Length: 293
Image 1 (cartoon, rainbow, N blue to C red):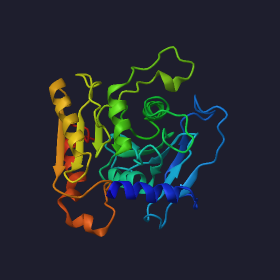
Image 2: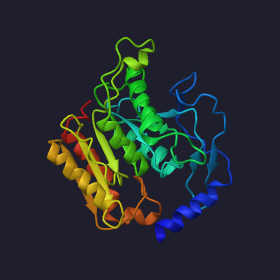
Image 3: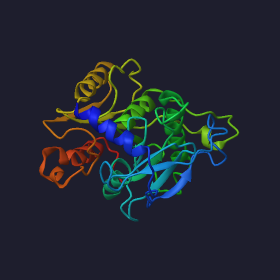
């Protein structure tokens, strides 16, 4: 009942518009000449936020996918990087709570972050599919970061994906559906591999989706709260990873609900055990050697 009411509030809010949220990171378009599959789509992006239904900012109607670049302070770079896939039920993207705020936390760890603005399968009148255009945007973002790794002080062998809720679904798709690049591609970006070196799935929307997991799936970190309706699916995903022989770590906290990002929706977040999950992620990455400078 609570989830249904929340979706109703957000759907009602999205029928209006608000001033675009000004991302602090520099915008880089994934396909400067237009994304394949978006030809002829010129509808402007719509934003909602700053009070209804909460203080966070959402964007929908995306046809020109991009990344916003957030780099750690000079001298603190570890070489590791994350593509960040915000959540929003494939209807919109929560660009601050599950985007920019996450990038800032990762930067503090010495990790470069790239907030993805991907096409949406369930936006109003959308013709896109999550496992086609949205996945293509994630894959392209990974290739772009590898292609410009030197410019951004990134190790091309340490590029991961972190996704929240529906973004966690995209992260699961990306870590199981990838290629080594296309050596003969006219576009040099396409010559880079689309396989993430590691993946983080935060309260992911992966219900019933475990068939694509194999021993080739990269190391994976999962976080969810027990009182989140998605907790069972996250646990099943973890078991499928374990069965396939994939290095994986799962953290389930007693309470905290859904959609908390890395910083929480209220000040109460800092008083709860779940608030420590970014530190556990940092320890996991360090243990696997991803944070070595």
